[in-house]
Image 1: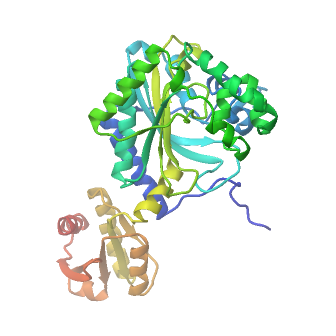
Image 2: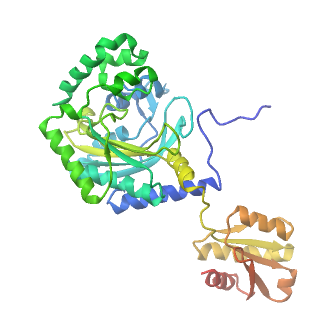
Image 3: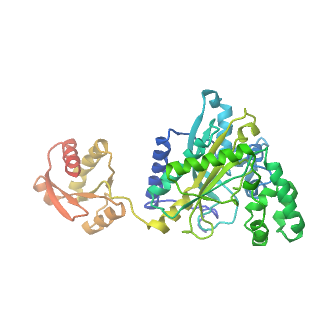
Length: 424
């Protein structure tokens, strides 16, 4: 019988790699909470209409990449291809906006049917933040700083911040006409996707990665040239605030992002560490999304950061670093030692927040030490017939390769206390 493999475009995460994921997720939570953001968790699947209305009918996500199915009641459901639309749905369903501005973050999987490649999977994972109810550029800079702090914490100093403005419903129609005037004379030379988008949504052409479109995109008019007074004032404020925080950036008029709901500010942190697909984190403002999904007019801004891609960049830039060694590996040499050590390990697990590892098989001491190395244990506690006869237990420092003896007192809880103190 052939073994069953994970579906194409998905992957398993297991030790020691899962430790890197745990650390990253903990750092995401720590930084978001420093800014006053609380965690929100939404369903992995939602009504298909949520994404058609929220993400946009003309996006690649809706047109090509969604995992959509009929449930047993015949309703169209979709595995979430992004998380912002679900957050907005939850805000409206639970009337959270009535409480005032909402600052939320999430960590979880999303699903897109696309060709798997380095850092891109059909099931991927994302950390994101969303700030609702704050119309000014102060909120834009706030979410950008969250991303910048996470990137700095991991030593990705070469990641560059690019910013742009994509306008709003006041000035975007003028820009749309300028794009049509630019692209229409070259319609037959555009890629098939861009020809299809030309009349429906020419802004999507600017996001094309097809080499056939590159020269036409490069010479297209920019949105910044067509901003209305309010959008220009918002963009100018964004730049002033970034300067005030000392965050360096580059104005990149070709950033449009891949979703229809963006307005005004869009931004990306890009890195060359993983080649041409260099976006580490991207986001922007979406002041019309809440109203598009049936709520009151509500400003919003946020970003999404792919965990797989981020960890790839970290490994390329900073190298792969194992987390610090932690915890105690319990090593029993013989049946009598095992009987005694089981109670001590149980007491350790109740008393200490550090992990206590145990492999109760009869093996040579060197094999147990190899297990301790795989577990990334900091200490080993060793008990055998000789130690039992001397009423002692050996504590080995696995970094310094030094031993010390502790008294093997009658109470397992007291031995555990001595071990916790000794490994302090």
